[in-house]
Image 1: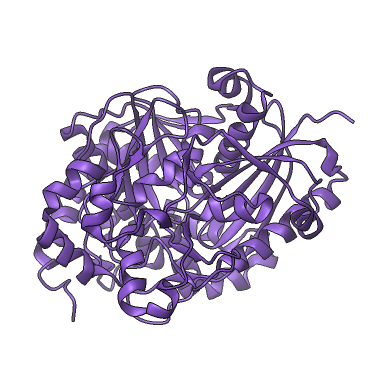
Image 2: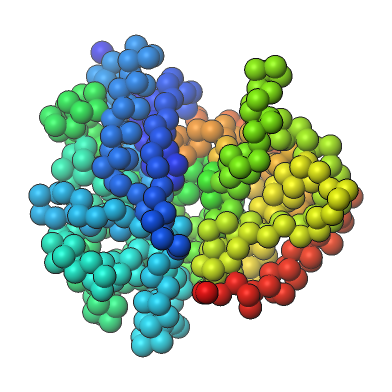
Length: 504
């Protein structure tokens, strides 16, 4: 039986996605598996890595069984995952505690202290990133100060994709693209910095060996084969950051090419072949060798619409059978009836604090401009526009740092909305190209596996074979004028309110 399929695993925030691709990037099977985010206290957001594993195993089995694909046909497995986990495991590989995820801001005081004691500029000089509570660094130290019984048993700290790789193979690794979550990672050299480890108080023994994202780190062992349905001996590559794999899956492999992210979180990733950092943005290695990604990462992306739908779309859900349209599609339609600029309604999409470029864990979502003439459609469209404004803000900071984005290549569920994608083109003034949006991230993970096992000779071949453009959105100059004015209001709103957006 020929081994010509690749399996990609995506550890997202609200669900995992498993997809099987042929060598040309065609989706042969795709299944999602849900799991919760736990919010035990204000500022906390955590997940149970063992629930990721259960969801992944269920999704893999369903993928294979529903589509009559033999596990023997899988040539390799690639894994991508959400950023900035801090999965503490003991020597037997048991998870010691729930992991804070990228939305978690509980360690703000630790960051404030370290930025003062070590110096924020010294940390930035090594890491290429400012020290913020969302990153892995402060979460490890939070364990030390608040969960000493956990900290004392830590053998290694893993990231989301490396945890799944460990469960599949038994190999403990740290891929290059996820290194940016730790401020003892030297962004220029791609290695751990022992001196900064000491200054931060992070034992270097906690940190796994750094490996290339396309390196085969092991093969599926018997226990994992039993639980997941994969064949014993199937090669598994290290994988990488979800945003970086999505960037690859969207076809971004050359300097200047840019991915626009429309998953739970929003933002963008600009591909660069030279080191360019800005304290307001996020810098990491691409999963493609020799490239960096200058990223904007926001808390408000597709998750904003999921929140709005959950809380305010009872009517649309009740009409689903009658209309044959999902509640999100119905919301999209009522937003389309509202003119650009939402007739003065502006939304700040800071629904879990905000990451780049304002880095305020206490920022809040705000609707401005409501009156009795406004309808639900105004609020829906303002949500979409607010996310687009946060994207523009990040792009402007990146351009000031010398990283120019030209065409945006959209990925994630938000790219399925023609309206939302057009709004992003109009707000930013940039052409937006949409590849196969729903599969970009898992495709990127699968491409890593394909390169790692030799199914593709290089990334050029892989992208040329697998990434297809489905549509293109050109900016509308008249709408751009309207949005320029609304964007100024958006920026002024936060500046006016930020003194209120502090720890209570």
